[in-house]
Image 1 (cartoon, rainbow, N blue to C red):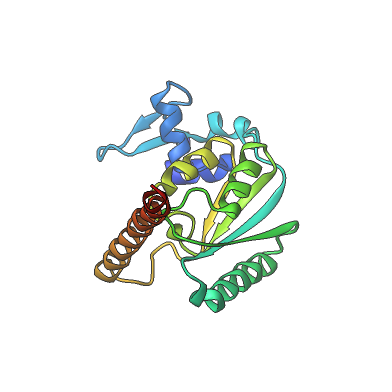
Image 2: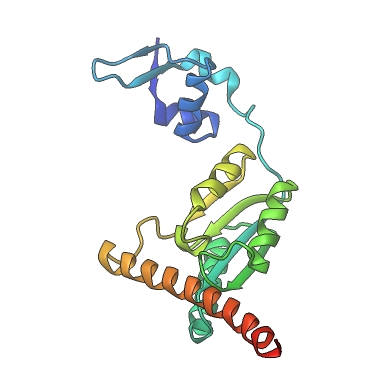
Length: 198
């Protein structure tokens, strides 16, 4: 009897290891046994018949690039070019590039709305990003969860951001302050003409 680790089992089935753990919690595809260290082991004979049965999304590959401000327009072009090159080098067909200019806290960006709509309509097979925070500054895990549920593959070129944690946190705080101050002063600017009219 040949036993496989969770990683090798996931590879055989063409799914993520997290998918196997989730199935196990639901009582589906339990491991044959566990090691002394508590690691799951699967029997190859029970796994092989299931190989290739996982439903996969069909559709296009979307490369999503985003920057926060207009003065980063060149960075946006660089991001998009890098994503396209990655897909070309990997031989991935049917590529669409979506770019957004706006805060990572803004959920109403045109490109993000288009991306989410296409994913929910089953038109996307793969989403490619440079880093996770290019999608959203906060809340990206929810969208990744939707992708996992709909069998949309997510590829992040830089799994570990280039910035260390301290500059990253500073950037996030500045972005939060910018968004909320612009909303506050935008709200006040609409009230001022009304107050003057009275």
